[in-house]
Length: 481
Ligand code: C2O
Ligand code: CU
Ligand code: CU
Image (cartoon, rainbow, N blue to C red):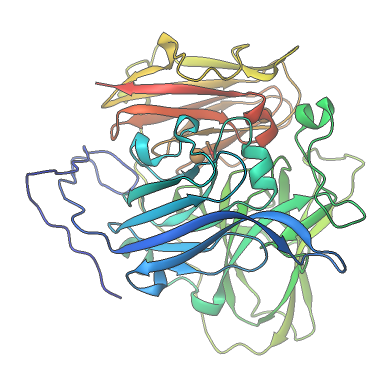
């Protein structure tokens, strides 16, 4: 694979200040992403897709092709999903997004640290038959990111109808670990959907659907109802996106083995972490290792989701089934140390003594809100202004309201500083690693610490239950000099 080279020049330099998931303290990127490594066309259009036996389903799909550069930048997907991007840190790609829908749209690159004009803010939404060209310079460390539309009020609808895809970033730090790769590295996009008797999608029908978020009655994985696969007696790397609109999972193995977590939203953890179960809310990603080498041919192991609350009356359900059908040929030793994550110390924050508290609560006539406000494009409160180059502590306060809200902040990845738990999150939530989406459980107050060091401009933070985001648990924040 051709690696791009960083070339140091002065004119037009995209200078990134020192910070970041991928840099050690004091290290500064002063490099120019000079040429595009690839140019990709990404087109949104209505399509009929065969999902269930019988009638085809009307979907909205993203189709992509590499028009310049090597074909490895894009992998076509199964089902209705958009293609998977696969890019190395330091590469730069151009994406020509064409909107062939009958409504406005714009693509957001979830988890990538990008300037405002590349971030897919709803004020950038383009009308039918228009195009938008993205210049994506990949600063993020290796990790599983994703992309989806973000037009205000229509994000939930468009994602539900199929518009989403993976964005895989690789880097040298990750390569050195020699994690299971190729056919031993598997990607899973979890999305629940609700169909009518003609195999057409049923979306939001009531205020209740908006308040609770749209939950389906069928679980699709990678755009397909097929939720099992054959595996060898080998180790696998399993990489998951919760691409559903509203459903939160709590994943565990059916054989009682610990879940071996190696990464979250912003890439690898410091060390492999054994968990009894992993809470997994919409928008989040998890990276797991599993070793089937001690299984017997014919064994089946399921990844299942158990109720969020222990002793609840609801039943676990199968998310995915692995059937062990082949002897193994590859050996793999579980790593312990994975990467180095420098903790952001709270005294780095300019507001260490006065965290910005955002209250999460429902409001009559609006829906779910932040500080009792719905989304107001371009009405940015003083509290929502941040000085470029600073670090801040924000708190999501859900002391008064009763459901999980996965809170997502655009821009660079953050760290969870502290969780003052309500009655549910103790022992079931893992807050390590770099995050862009954090599940706030009823009663919780979650404090995050985030560096706003890279790009000035207008960005979003919101709940990633897409019906909440649309109605309208979302606010702008402005990073300014
Ligand atoms: Cu994945 Cu603003 O969202
Ligand atoms: Cu995002
Ligand atoms: Cu919410």
